[in-house]
Image 1 (spheres, rainbow, N blue to C red):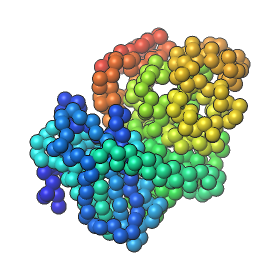
Image 2 (cartoon, rainbow, N blue to C red; image 1 turned 180 degrees about the vertical axis):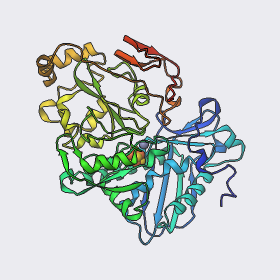
Image 3 (cartoon, rainbow, N blue to C red; image 1 turned 30 degrees about the vertical axis):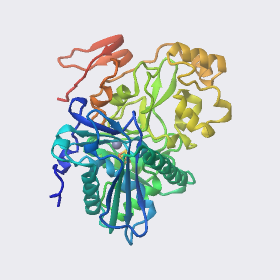
Image 4 (cartoon, helix red, strand yellow; image 1 turned 180 degrees about the horizontal axis):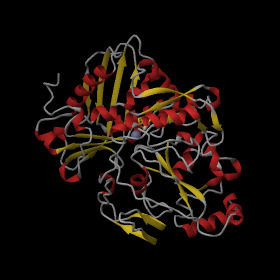
Length: 466
Ligand code: SF4
Ligand code: ZN
């Protein structure tokens, strides 16, 4: 099937990482731009593959180019609602190609081509061809498929802006519904390939943390393939409407996480927060010193108030673990009226990057708009605290009424998630892997090691399960 493709194509290459030393070129990603878009269209010329802009053999080693992956599909039973879910598979299917690495989704994609792939004669045209074969194989509803790979900067720029409009239309649709309006939620286990205990619970109010799949997308996907990675989850009885806890959601998550996660609060970072795989758009994190919650997204390059950048934080809370005080989320979820409602919603948010603040501004309650600091107002706890004081942020009242003792915190260092690996930290200044007022390391032989006010600097931390 892949006889014309000069490199191997197989699910076994899914976890392949292409590091700087072995990289021929980088496509899209934080230093360039890019997007992927699947659209159901009429009159799709089946098998048409086109590359617009420079091919790999016209690029130079170490180059960074923009990238657009445009996929048009047609089929009698294909619904527009399936676009989001089919598009989300681009990540996995691109990674079947040996020597091609794909991270993230939508307009956050980040790809690399290895030197070996280039030497073997691999071209972007082959990527298009492979995708066209794999998508048809994975989704029998697709009768015709055409793939266009864009590397021409002006074309990619236009494509990215069109793609963003499409994402926006998809996202806006789900805003019309609330969790109460439906009897079923959906589960997704697509990310179990690298986060084996991770189960996403997708509800009208809580778009999936990858930001690419909403309740409508799931409904279409579960209808198309009830045995697939996206499935119906009956809500069961409501246990707590503020935290967002339901009996049957707990049961299904327990079953699908192989018993690892037994309870999920959909709208809180405390106690039983939603688990995080690694492809979240942003992370909500508890800041004990301020008793508030910060938000950081993957585009933010600086340090968070916890003293670590996004990449290190992602390493701490991903991989499918339930880590109290952290939860991965989509930016779209911040537009929901239920956004972390059990914790106080925006009234509990004490820091977030300016870019996110601007993008969700109309959803921030009027009285809070000027009270939440961004990196422009401060990044250290001291700076943030004086901003909060000056603006009369409601957290100040909360801090006064609650005890002044440092809350007992237990922070665990997680192994670096597959999705981030060393890639994110490459070329980055050494930043502390973990900072904790008090850090307890589990160890054998009845010995407990406690670090107080420790900042740990490490090039790599590997903690193996016994
Ligand atoms: Fe599915 Fe969640 Fe992974 Fe998105 S992040 S693909 S919803 S498991
Ligand atoms: Zn994921």
